Length: 237
Length: 237
DNA sequence: GTCAACTAAATTGTCAACAATTTTTAGCGT
DNA sequence: ACGCTAAAAATTGTTGACAATTTAGTTGAC
Image (tube, rainbow over all chains, first blue to last red; front, side):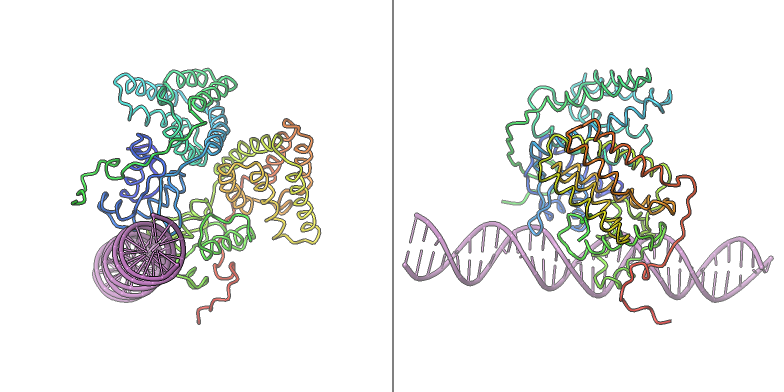
């Protein structure tokens, strides 16, 4: 049950969005890849209207770009876009973490600690899919616990974008933020030290950004069916 | 040509969104008002699919709430939502104004100065519609000039929400932020004084928020046709 | 061989009828 | 009159066929 679930009541649409997002962060769907409506319809066994709705949501999230009358592609954020996304995340998350320092209950802190433990476990067993998911979820959790619905919504948009950016520009080294930095943030929250929590968050996000190669921009395109590893019938040659 | 124009290529949909937004900030469409699809279809002389798309966009923007299978209403943000919206705006706009202090060209500053002049003119001639529109546009202009597309998009969401909130909770007194405070912000930008610009923006937004009555919550509902003052045929009694 | 115009295929965009759901209304017994 | 049930009306949600647009392919002149 991925954390980026949109507010849509329709399960199929959420599933489409989630699968595409997952394929992107796993780098099986590269930026620029074409997303044909009919193809997605076959893969997910649904109607074109549904696919269309899902693509519309994904465009809002910044994960795909829709060229009118020309179809949808995985978005290709430039270096500028990447910097903007991190800049916005910094602004929002500094506020969130500060807020949480004031309002966090013992239960909230336990939830966060438990989450970090999960992260560590996933890290230990080399489950990179879980690592990526949990890593993003940590930040979403802070937003959720701070209780601001709107800030959560905004952060969701930003997290999706930075995920795409990370998948696009990441070096072979650190794929995601390690649990240690999350731990330091949690420690500051627990100590109710707003300044330190804010500083740790800043450091963490800056670390994430500088771990990218924001100079070159390789952008190959990959096949859609393989990326979504669907069991839909391959087209007979 | 309203400033909140969404990225939609379709003119009709933009028009629907703009007219509804305008009716809301003018307080002719009150929060909670029902938005029936068929009614909107008649009013704007379009198809239901178009109306549906427009409502979907407006929901994303936070201006309407769609209750599944039950229809759409003008959103009714609570006090919590209002505080969140201003909190997010503060986070984003502090960053924007700081950024603009560094990057503003002489032309940018002239643009802003000209805009404030327009605000003053509208204020002088008592054109409250223009005052509301220009007042919001000033903040959007700062985002636009700072060159961050993503931050502009986020601020657009937030500005729409705070407009709704202002329309909902405003006292009879100050309807919008006066041009004077905008002037102070511009002065700080021109002086390249990041700290002061940030402070002025903070003060401005806090002033906006405290000018509201965030305790009571009157929410009458008004008629749809009259609010949009359409020339669509009234239903014969 | 290159380019242009033209035709055919593939793809997206739109619509109007149909289905599902909710709300209102009417009926009925107590 | 009140509460309950069931039909009827009103409203939203969905689907599949059709229209418009773009892309690819073909032909033919130079």
